[in-house]
Image (tube, rainbow, N blue to C red; front, side, top):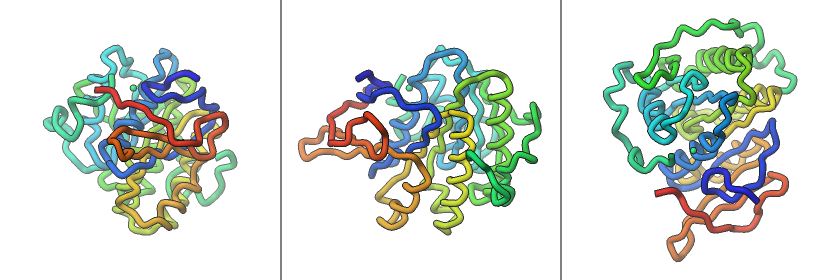
Length: 260
């Protein structure tokens, strides 16, 4: 067993999408980014969807966590509606402690801008954060059509430039649920986004704060992904994780430590 970041996981099969579930939004955000930033190959692309923190802040966190990160490989879709000056880039929960880490898309995809006809080749008109990361902006998390179009364009752009695999993180899925308000609509969107990731043999990481939703909602959203990682704080205060639906991974509660 190897460690993806500080998490004792075996290799995750290409084309896998997974949820990261817990009851601390900061913790699951950090763990999700740790999973993505653990890949250090120069030919890996990264696409992040920022829903609860600004794209500028997310870019800053990633480059502080991985100073050697090739920012030309990293694209962000910012759905927060925040400005482009990056003035909040050094603030926010856990900023100091962030770790140094469909098949068959059908006509329904058009509703969310995830159909192939929305792919515009190399067209990227986003701004650049101070870190050099390209950021495309969507006015609201609830505008799933615009989000889907931006996501599709950037994902295809990374693939066309030879980045393989493309690692994707939705930071975070809970914010999409809260802003859209309809579980079935969000589930459908996530299924289509997951399908695009799977068809390109990438990796998709979707954090969800279980404390923010009822049990039925969490179970429903889980079904959009191949499996997931659940984390909790044990009675002694230590952190534990277990996996769901992921081959050759720990299914029992297993201790692990978040980087300091």
